[in-house]
Image (cartoon, rainbow, N blue to C red; front, side):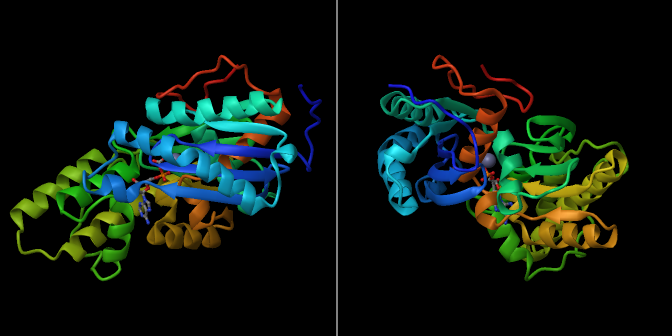
Length: 343
Ligand code: KG4
Ligand code: ZN
């Protein structure tokens, strides 16, 4: 039997995330009170292949989804009877992986008689910043930097976004992963480069800062090629110096573009999100720039930067509030963009 749903600060959303290589579930109340957040990472399974293997990811999600949801409920201290809606990522992501979460969420929603909410993974990354700091002032400029996406998004208010800049080729995380793979540093590349760069000299190699003074778009594929060419010509160069110089080039561009966009748009707040937002140099440099230019900065915790289901539940709460639940025939959309509206 369907329950009447009034969305407010007591509304509890169960969020489910299975778009890539993390199986995650979380309970969030009122859009920003995280009652529990459980993430089962498949990193170890995929590491030996040097990247995510889609079929293996789908199977691992199938094995983990029920225990992960159970654990999220147990940790929240609530029973299924307190779940008011079930939200799941419907895109973008790997089709087989997405379908595991979407199917589980729809089945649960039907069984419990509550709404199902399809969530855009990119929109959820925007809300992740608000989870740690819900009282931000709009307009907010978000630098969203993950393994699959790099974009600057103007958020005028929840649900009202505009992409003002994006990558012309590789995503920032993809550049970290590709450079790490070339240097045999393992997968994912971001965390290992971040750590190794701390022992290197960021001035050692003057890698290109593509499009630094040219609009708000970015490009990282030339930088990746420059690193590869440099290493081939300088076989004895220290790996720590190379990755420190590479990381510094990425961060210089990301910070410069973010600050320019924030000034151009008259943003009140700047936030960062996505896996690369866990990068220690990016966090330090953007903090420094925001302080010197008087911008309020929202730096999500590391756990809220990388993929998790609390951000899905939060985005689900906002979606419910803005437009209600999704139709049950909503599917999974591997190439979904930020602006695509769902039924
Ligand atoms: O947002 P996310 O968890 O998954 C996607 O939606 O893509 O981001 C994963 C990406 C990977 O490319 C990974 O190398 C990168 O985030 N990453 C980092 C760091 N931690 C994760 N990149 C730079 N520095 C880090 N500390
Ligand atoms: Zn993500």
